[in-house]
Image (cartoon, rainbow, N blue to C red):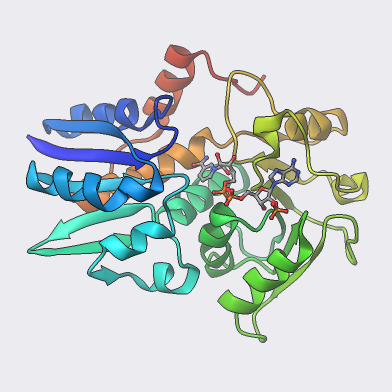
Length: 276
Ligand code: NAP
C-alpha cells in the first residue's frame, strides 16, 4: 500500500483523494491517500507523524505552499525559482520538493489551444498559483506574458524576482493594459470564490481569447460568465487540478495516468460545471 496525503486548511472539500484513487485503479496500484487538516503551525508535526506512519508522497495546498519548503531536503529548479511547492516525494532518505501546478495548467491549455508557441497571455493574479505557473507558461514558448494584480506591486515583484529582464514578461495594474490583445486570459485570483471577477477592461476580450479560470465549482465563475457574455470560450480550473495531480502521481509512481476519463467522471460524480 502506497501511503499518500494532502495537507492544507481547509481540506474537507479537496478532490485529490478521489482523483488519485482513479489514477491508482488505472495503474493497478493500491494507495491510501488521506486529507490531513493542517493549519500552518501544525505542518511540521503533522508531516513528521505522516512520515513515521509510512508516508512516501504528499501534496501541499493552501495556505502551506511556501511554508512547506522547510520540509524538503532538496528543491527542484522551479521551486527554487518561485518559492512555492505542491508536491513532496521521498527518494532514499531525502524529501524532494516540486511544483506541478504549471505542468497541469500548460497541458490543460494545450488541450484547447494546441501548442502555445507565439501566444500572448494575460495572467491575472500574483499569489502562489500565479507564481507557480508563470515560468512554465514562458517555457512553453509563448510570445509574451503580462501579469496584472489588484495590488500591482505584487505583480511587479513577481516578474522582477522570477524573470530576467531579457525575458518576454511584463507587469502592471488591473486597470491599465498597454497592449490589450491576448490569445489567452487566465484568472489566477481567488475572486471566483467570492462570486466576484477582477475588474479588468473588456478591451482585453476584443480578440476573443480563451478565458480560463483556475477556480472550479458547480457553476461558471463571475469571470467565466462575463467572458461568455462577450463571446469568448471559457474553461474552469478542473483540468489544471487533474493535470497537476497526474504529474504528482507520475513523480511518486513512475506511471503517467490518463486524465480525460477522470475529468469526465469527476464532473459527473461531483455535479461540477461542464462546458455547454
Ligand atoms: P493567494 O496566494 O491567496 O493569492 C490570491 C490572489 O487573488 C492575489 O493575487 C489577490 O490579489 C487576488 N484576489 C483575491 N481576491 C480578489 C478579488 N476579489 N479581486 C481581485 N483579485 C483578488 O492564492 P493562490 O494560491 O494564488 O490561489 C488563487 C486561486 O487559484 C484560488 O482560488 C485557488 O483555489 C486557485 N487554484 C487552483 C488550482 C487548480 O489546480 N485549479 C491550483 C492552485 C490554485 P492581492 O495580491 O491584491 O491580494
